[in-house]
Length: 435
Image 1: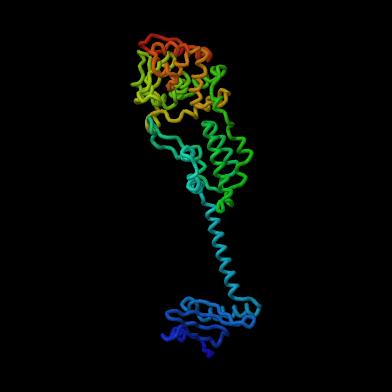
Image 2 (image 1 turned 30 degrees about the horizontal axis):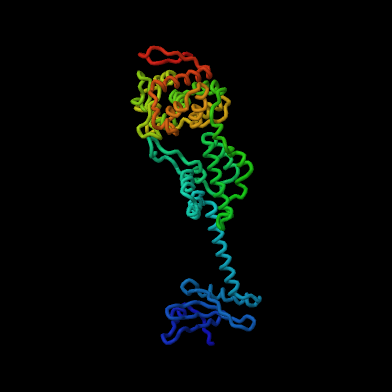
């Protein structure tokens, strides 16, 4: 095996003949260093013996390796052999270590940037084939961003109870975050808060068993502290005001600085209307002379006419006529009241009462109507419940005057229990409250 001193000229002029697969040029100054040429390529190599067996290691392309650098690498490889190490194994370990470092950096980057929304979407995609339509709809509704036009009536949809968590990083989800989330949501929508926790818990358990996300999802996030923050099941049944609560509730609600919200909340209790129905009441739907309101109905597409009781009429008559909506808002995009829950929650806190939802005020109407022995059919017709019995469905359509008799008794009894003094003046100037 002849050797020559490597120079840049000899390196550049060395090529593989067309009749051969490969040829070698060996360096006279660095034992084991060679230049291997094949058709269209050249590379520095090192060749030596380990335990009596020849080994060959590729160093690199002459275009990127200078002669001195290649010679130094050849000496390093020879040192490894002298120490009893196989340069090929050392190189493989080095490559593996570099790859592991890259993978670790990649994993750390993913860990620091991975959003809950991304993992949630994967969870839905992987599991939805085994879910029923109702369960799928629950997951869609609870994670919705909100702000979409409602299919029925005006306004936009509310943000799903789970949506705020989906906008966070996975590594930021821990016990304190979930506990605060539950406490905050349960103040305004206890049932949704509990349902959201149940669905999120299933999702988090799935993450803890996932090969990729188990190292990211905090296994202690669903702690005892969080579970204590979740509203108890069955709170819906107690989501009503009792007769003994009326005085404190009316005092707090009547003291709300925004007269529109104050009148709206009292209207829910006094009519039993659904929150959207009352919120979409227009001035053209109110007849003060007749003492009636036309409510857009969830059950009947034509809506329903209900009595406009004296005290509620006084509250509505005192509201500003900003636009077409009775319960208007100068800051809302559509001009009508959008979010009265916060003010209601503050009023409940001020009154020292347990939380009652806006829908709970509708339940309160049905519950307290029994105190004045209001007929069940009258209650259903005012509230817009679909009739159940055959007689109710086909034969009884009570006139407004009859509804007004019972509705007026109910309002008068409510005001009496609440300690609200009220007197009616002449129709020409509407009604007023006597404080």
